[in-house]
Image: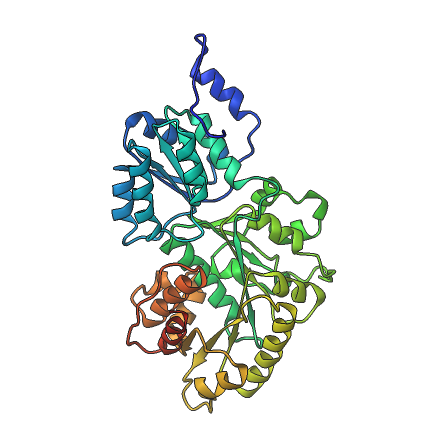
Length: 425
């Protein structure tokens, strides 16, 4: 049985056995971990595990109180990628308490239980109910790192992260701005690691919007596919915030950027194995690699302004993506720059009706907010956290990550989003 208690024998030091056990482990990807412990004997090795170099990219927080503390905490907070729970309860009592936790736990969250009963029946019941691993105390630092690595870096496992591709129906509609601000909101609201990949190599704006000037970025990866792995990709990432990293575009014209259809596939797959959320900023063009990227993304968000050319282009994108992704949800729609003074516009209802889509949100035209943020290399939430547009961005972050349901609010621009949420009930 995997995950059983680590014990030393014949006087061998725990530290020496930790070193031996850790030598074969690869670094853990950018994930968020929260542990709720009942004893110092379990909390201490978990805290030491967070200091190991293999956990350098993970964010680990340890709290006391066990399962009851976790239940209380997650009533008002989103669950991370991994929750570690210690319980001294007897097997049947432990199973009952975990049933309550399931009501407040995000479906994608993995759970590891540290128990005090070496019971095969309990282990089987826990695995049957969806627990990722059961570990019997006492535990060591190496046990914890090994369990986490076994869950998240199995080479045969599915990628850790979800990819969300943003594309504009037309140039200048604000798709990149929306992608960057949503990435920032996801990382800050949910304390989750997010990687932004700017795929517009000649004219990308992510480095400007995040006020970054990295020496390397996505170009080094795409022109050296034979070198791409998690370690190499990690060297190319620029840190924009505590939990937000950027694969920046060079934004230069010193070479042409003609790629085959699979050019970015390995980069995206590697990024998804390194972070829970990967935001793909796809430029407004139609090439083999752009088509492949949109077809394979977990979600696609189309940004459009309420004009006729945008409607035609959005219709073409929606119809094409439905054919390319017949077993996936249709792309999401965000109408941006609405209510421009003196500009004739198509209403949100008239725009969405021929598409068969309800807009996730209608974002009003706010040139001062967006202009000030762009000129200062800051996100909208950093400029004015209480602005109505920032609230819309935060609502979208909840929807696109599948987090807790957003409660309806009677505010401008949220009507489409609320309607969409009600349809999911």
